[in-house]
Amino acid sequence: MVTAFILMQIKRGAVNETAQQLQEIKGISEVYSVSGKYDLVAIVRVPDNDSLADLVTNRMPALDGILATETMLAFKTYSRLDMEDMFGVGMN
Image (cartoon, rainbow, N blue to C red; front, side, top):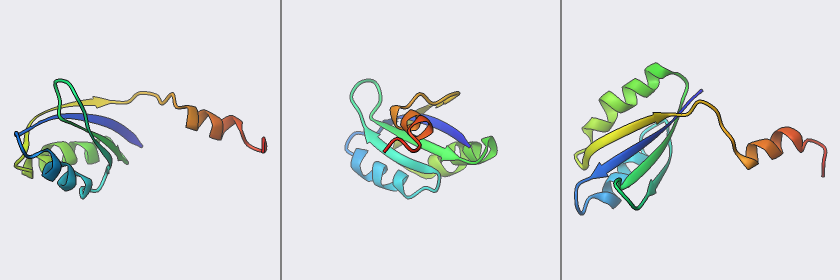
């Protein structure tokens, strides 16, 4: 499983529409509107790098509202929820 974070700059006035379009793309699990240099951040979970490449280079460019993207790959997850799931078995 490949997890990636895609930071996006969006055309003015197109944030809501673009976020809704992104949610419909298979592999994008969450979309957040954020403050700062970027307007949206998508959390992507796909089976492999080829699937990520297809999403970033073929499916996302079809959306008119996206001006620029920056993709970051996750190497390792440090999540309290994941840690509780791993070590909390039988604790309840």
